[in-house]
Amino acid sequence: MNFELTEEQQMVSDSIERFVQDNYDLESRVALVNQSPGFSADHWKTMSELGWFGLPFSEEDGGFGGNQLDTMILMGHFGKGLVLEPFLASIVLGGGVLKRVGSETQRKEWLDSVIDGSKQLALAYSEPESGYEPHNVAVAGTKTDNGYTISGTKCMVQHGKTADALVVSFRTSGGTVDQSGITLALIPADREGVTVQGFVTVDGLQSSEIAFDQVAVSADDLLGEVDGGFAPLNAVINDGILAIAAEAVGAMEVLYKDTVAYTQEREQFDHPLSGFQVLQHRMVEMFMEQEQCKSLLYRATMEVANGGADAQRNIHALKHLIGKAAFFVGENAVQTHGGMGVTEELRIGHYFKRLLVIEAQFGNTDYHLDQFAA
Image 1: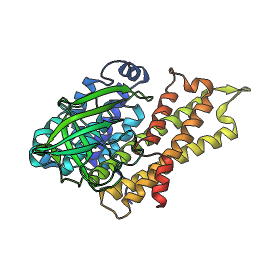
Image 2 (image 1 turned 90 degrees about the vertical axis):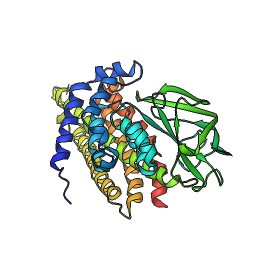
Image 3 (image 1 turned 180 degrees about the horizontal axis):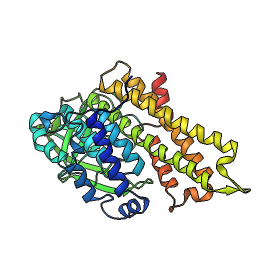
Image 4 (image 1 turned 120 degrees about the horizontal axis):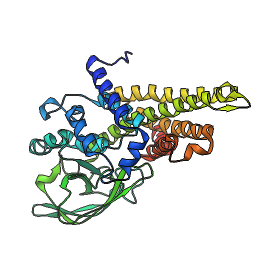
């Protein structure tokens, strides 16, 4: 297979790499985490001006007609800088649902603003009792003359606090764990009955819990077919897994390279640590784990982008491997650095925390192993 980037993809990759190098040193990132809204509005504007938000959308919707491969390139560089801006939440997840099943009116009303960065979306699908199953939906819709009213709670909604509209899954028929009977809707965040409680996660990113109290959902708010929301929701979650897997590969690259550099500088018994064979083996293993993840990331991304028959199975395999490698690379980076590996002053601990969150996001390592075996 040819893994070389096209000329256009290489240009995008170079621009993203420069952006991360110029704007995401550790001190700058920590400052953004500690101020509202948890990311930089200036960075967000720059990203939109550079055209990155239009990559995954069709030309008919105002984008550039890209696919998951373009998102992979961008998220890989984001992982190297631990970028905080809500690209995943607004473009990949929220925008991913809208581009798949949004009506022409909904896409015209929202996608231009999403692509130019003036509006943000968030995907609210996870619930306190749903575990890792996106089809475990208890938030129910009660039929009305003009649509539905919904009540219940969604949790771990990425960047829900700053979103202008929420893509929400709710049940319109069937049992709580049935894949059928799930419906999606695009609900403005300021609609009566919507309460958003934002918080910072351990990796410094923004998340929220959202309560719905008899929130009115009109027929015009519905995304796609009634009872047919699971398929597009699952497709968007797969895109999310590919995106955070690319981010994890980028973060692991930073960890093993930082570890190699540290062992070349740090001396023990009058010799640099890099001269000890056991540490040489360990760093080779860290490199191999990251390279294996990168290879499977390419395979899974191309399978999904091309509609391959094994796409779903490759997604499960990728998420399982990413979770295992994240622990291995992160733990060894911290152990090699010693106690300072978990201090706030060194970026090793920040990358490890992000990898731990990625391991649990969209289903953890054990969950995806079970799904792969099934």
